[in-house]
Image 1 (tube, rainbow, N blue to C red):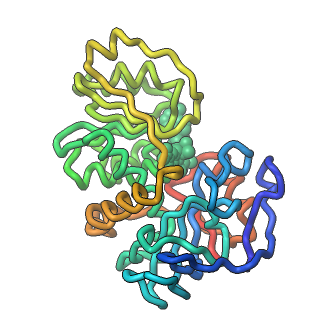
Image 2: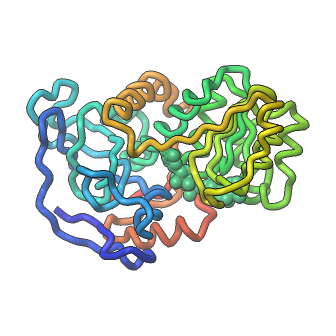
Length: 320
Ligand SMILES: NC(=O)c1ccc[n+]([C@@H]2O[C@H](COP(=O)([O-])OP(=O)(O)OC[C@H]3O[C@@H](n4cnc5c(N)ncnc54)[C@H](OP(=O)(O)O)[C@@H]3O)[C@@H](O)[C@H]2O)c1
C-alpha cells in the first residue's frame, strides 16, 4: 500500500510517498480501507522530529481516519466487512490502509462525508475527554482558546450543546465572529483584545481549554473563576512559564495537563465509547466538523504548509 511518511525530520518537503507491506490484523483489530485521513498539529510536531509514534504504531503520521472495513481479525464482534467507520489512531493514518482495534472505531455518523468523519474523531475525543478531566458541568462557563482550530471548533460546539456558556479566542475579529456563529456567547480577537480581562469581567471561566501553553499561564489564571480548572493540551507558545501560586490558592484553582495519544488502549477505548454515547447523538445538527480543505494523500506536504501558515478554519483532510 501507499503511505506518506517522513523521510527525515524537517519541513513539509520531508513528507514523501512510499510503498510498504499491507497491515495485517491482530486479534481484536479491523483493517480499514482509508478514504480520508485528518491532519493534526501533532502531525507537524511529528514531522519536525518532536513527537514520534508510540511503540507498536506505524512510524508515519496520522491520528484519525475514515473508510470502509475490509477485513476483521479474530475475536472482532462490533464491526463487519463493509462497515463505514472512522477511527482514533496512535499513528499511521497517512496510509491507504490501517489496522486498528475495534474499540477505537466508530460508525461514520449519518449525514457526514468520509472527510468530515475523519476530521471529527481526534477533535471530539480531545474535546470531550478534557471536559471530563475538568468535570465540566452544564451551566458553567467554558473558555476555548483557538475556537476555530480543529479541536477548538469542536469544543465550542460541544460545550454549547452540553449546556455550557462558551467564550472563545481566535486570531482576528472575523474568526472570533465565526466562533459566535458556532455557539460561543462571545469571542475575542487574541491579537488585539485583552481577553483575560474580558473573561474575568464576565465572571471568569470555570473551565479553560488551552492550546497555547506557557505564554497564557498568567492570563489564564487571571481569567479563571474561583474553583476554576485550567486544562492545558497544547504548548504552541512554550512549555515553561511562571505560575502565581498565591492566585492559584486564592482561587482554589486547578491546573491539569493531558495527552490522548500515549494513553493505554483501554483508556482510549473508554474515551471513544464516551464520544459515541455523548457526541455522536449531537452530530450533525449541533456538532459538525469544519473541513477547510482536502488534499490527495500524496500531497500531505501542501496540507502541512497550509496548516503552518495559519488561518485554517477547522481541519484539513487527506483523501486516498
Ligand atoms: N493533549 C492532547 O491530547 C491533544 C490532542 C489534540 C491536540 N492537541 C494540541 O492542541 C493544539 C491544537 O490542535 P489542533 O489540531 O486544533 O490545531 P489547529 O487546528 O492548528 O489549531 C490551533 C489553534 O491555536 C490557536 N492559537 C494559536 N496561537 C494562539 C494564541 N496566542 N491565542 C489563542 N489561540 C491561539 C489558533 O487560532 P487562530 O488560527 O485563530 O490564530 C488555532 O485555532 C495543538 O497544540 C495540538 O498539538 C493536544
